[in-house]
Image 1 (cartoon, helix red, strand yellow):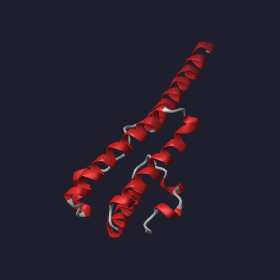
Image 2 (cartoon, helix red, strand yellow):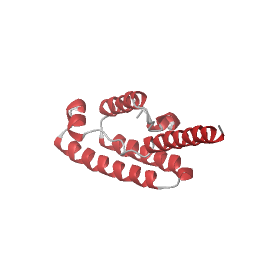
Image 3 (cartoon, helix red, strand yellow):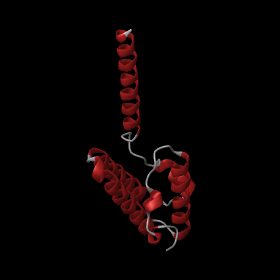
Length: 130
């Protein structure tokens, strides 16, 4: 009877560890970035804007990768920095209407994803106002 009880406890422990590990992996996925081609069509970018947006997206992905490699203590702060940097660069590149559409797109994407991009903590100055 003791061995049956110990077996059940071991099984529950393994299940708990597997569940916790699965949850941890969910937050270390590939960084979020919108496709430059799709953004180009949606925002009706000029060729110069398209090139600039492509480089901003690459920079954004690199910043997110760095944040995912950092300790969990610094991860949130670094992800916020990546997002604010992305928005600042996009605001400089896009027109007011294009930027508004971009922010709306990010908010919708964020709300639809399980993994948050930390948009809820953005200062108002980086939202759809220019």
